[in-house]
Image 1: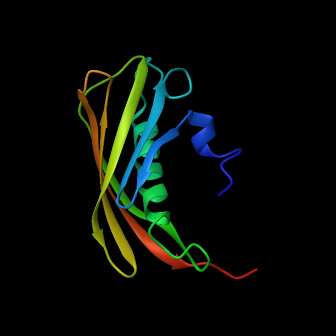
Image 2: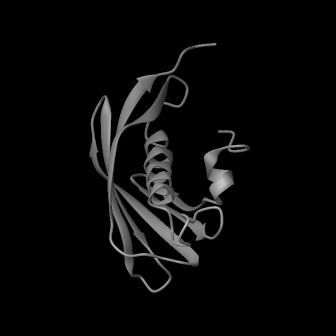
Length: 129
């Protein structure tokens, strides 16, 4: 998987743990991820959540013939954050033949809950080149 020149690199997202059904990633809260008032942008939190779900989902499919794409995502922004690092932990809730559902919780350095999200992925067939 080529991550160069992707949203992950633009936002500074780093995967720190990857296992079957669980992914942990970090993202800085800085000028790349702020909204105009200097707070963590809700869209950046959603991008982190979908990244965690997508990376985790891709680990569970046949990489030669399948891929995963976001089908639906929701997020509740619980607490603001001005600087530092946020950590997202994604856990698989459902693994079906054509869909997966992931639960993602984003916390700050003090374990304060910043955002909760649920992401549904579609499992698709990859076009053979």
